[in-house]
Amino acid sequence: MRELRDLFLQELADIYDAEHQLLKALPRMAEAAVDAELKEAFSEHLKQTQTHVDRLKQVFEKLGHPAKGKPCKAMQGLIAEGEERIKEYAGDAALICAAQKVEHYEIASYGTVCSWARLLEEEDAEELLNITLDEEKAADQKLTDVAEETINIEAAEGEAEAEEEEEA
Ligand SMILES: [Fe+2]
Image (cartoon, rainbow, N blue to C red; front, side):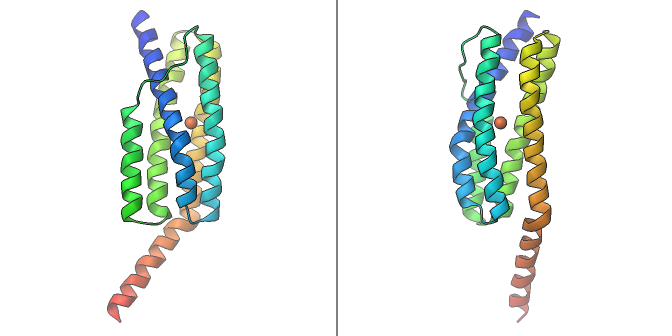
């Protein structure tokens, strides 16, 4: 169990850093979003992300370990790739794609640390991490809803217009 505990702490440090990276990226994403609902979703998730950081601090405290991040390369990559794509393809479709990849990374990470907290019988930590896991899932669902309602339709319309122009 000693090894799992170390791994657990490592993963928490990874998420802690990832959430801090998101605190910086989300305002830029909200600014880049065209659709009002998407803009709102990013602003809302920014507030939640601050709560996620605070909750992680509580988890570290419960574990008697200083809250400290370890550079999360995966999140750096996800954000960098997302920004590159958004520069190339201005529009909400590219933005939402990047955001959902980020959410899925977080869901995977929180899902894992929740299971490990359970195995390590860290009930308080498990409970806190579970709340965040549910919020990440809800944020991902929100993005799917916005995408299906508006963005994919707009992207398809844009495509159709481009085709019409080509034909004319
Ligand atoms: Fe989060």
